[in-house]
Length: 334
Image (tube, helix red, strand yellow):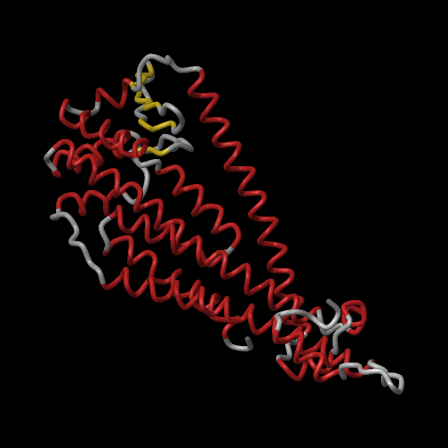
């Protein structure tokens, strides 16, 4: 456990560095799913490792050990964790849980705001044109979703570019990109190291919608022109909280659309899968070691406090008793 419990931290740090590169190397759809899996697994590994460190250190407090009936000396001999490390892990875990709760409330409010906005829109059409000179275009997720476009935005685009813009927003709704956003924001709230991954994920979603629009329109240059003109037209205007066609890094999106479609690469996915497998395996190994360590500490405490059996009666002595309980997966006090 002394080494394996720290592996999730290393994996999270590596992914924080590699995530922006994956966003530009992999095809957007694959990149989005890869980043979603990486965020979920890494966040769970991060929280699990912090919990194990916090518990193992706190368990060495004499008062806690007396209440739990295990040996502090046995714990320290098996796998010592300094109280400073345990305390820091407990604080980080508590801060992460609080941050996760706040982020969950914020995302619930955003979804509620989107639902209220949808309720005020006409129910008989997917596309809603707002009589506003301010150029804007965004998608409101839900059942069903809505696409909101202002007249100012429509006037700034040609017919083909309008088709590309609407195809982009429909891709956001059809592929449920808001669920990816929610996942990345929640995992980044729990694990601060995943914030670069969440930023890269936002860019990947826009690229995914761009590629979907390019397939629908059949011309990558038209989509690139639509993205560029929409961004220039809405420059200075506040971005809506919903998925917008002007989100992400527009120059990079335009360059990607003017280039050929990104090739399918397997090596980055395999490397990322190995990292996530190492994170899961190390956390499982650390949890198993922790369970074995607590069994040993309880057996040591039982052996130290067990009294000699009365004459003529047969009792199982401490070491044999602990061996039996470990063999059957139990504990000395079960």
